[in-house]
Length: 266
Image (cartoon, rainbow, N blue to C red; front, top):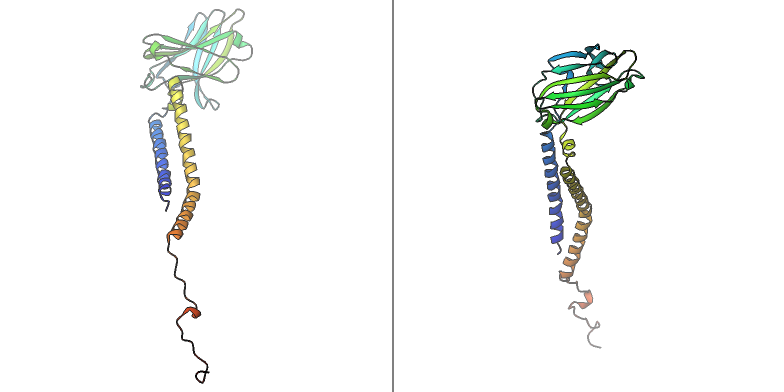
């Protein structure tokens, strides 16, 4: 009988399934331990205010915006030529550091038509070591960008500033700037994708998972035909080794006496 291959196939299917399940469980557990934390918003700072350089004027308030998905900063300004103004925020909640935050996400809606050429805006993240400056694109509709936080350059965050500068001459420019600023932690897979070695490892890992899935599907698909073929081979082999069954004798072959003609010998 041919049973070795059948038993090996039966053992391979649950083994491949256990390996794949263990791999997926490990990845899920590892990713769950590095889920993204709630962001730190500009509006959550305990201390906020405005400043001006020269004859500029500025006022800051909070505004709910459905497009931004929450509360945003509204900076109203008046900028004569050669002046600047802005808003600042200090005393953010604890946890705003390199251990929990990876990027700053900036959503901005700028002034009306024509003003983007007269106003230049930027965000400055000030820290115990230095300053990270990020230019802001000004458009009439919401635009967003994402920048890695340079913790090695900043150190600990002490203040975040939104700055608008007047460029060119002419009459004073008045307008409003809406800003949705969030410090966020990247999900694990996105964070790993920023490292070339991690991208290569992730590609290999995906290839391994795909290979395991393909092997599992092939094993399951080929298991039934193989079992049936083995069963047929076993039946044929048993039939060939089985001794032939005795055949019953016909009545002519049995030991039955032959009677002579009635009335004695002829």
